[in-house]
Image (cartoon, rainbow, N blue to C red):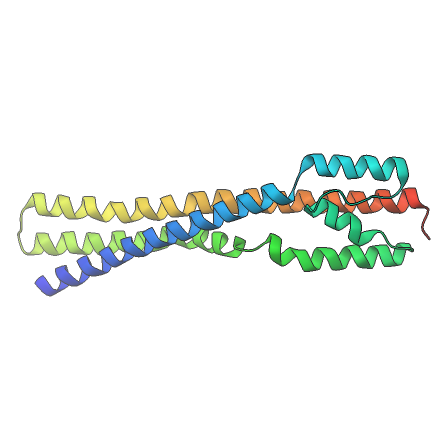
Length: 192
């Protein structure tokens, strides 16, 4: 019975360490994506390009953000070439845009279950204490420690899910805005 208590205790501690490491990984991805998106998706840049395309039908590069790169990519001599250049630009940049988002989605979906595993092992340990007649304080302490695993699992999952949804929506809006810029360019330049 003591072996069971020791084994579940070690595994539960390993799960807590794993969750701590996953939390650090998640936070580092969130910080990286936040910095990247802040540097790439500049609203002033989008508005400036939109105004330039509306007035002149062309855009001259003044910055290196996502919208400027897209505008330079899709300025082609025909509508077909513009569509292909735009499609190519989006495909090439999707990997950079979505970097780390699959990790956030996986952590958001699975961290609570990892925490739940730690909780189950802690409950098993607490029941083993009860079987050894270690006293109610040992049992209650074991249950209390077990619930930490679930709490930490949720602590990892909730920010990961929120960040994943936020970044996915930012990517979706950026692609829609660049699509709008492409359509404006085609309309203003009179391409066939």
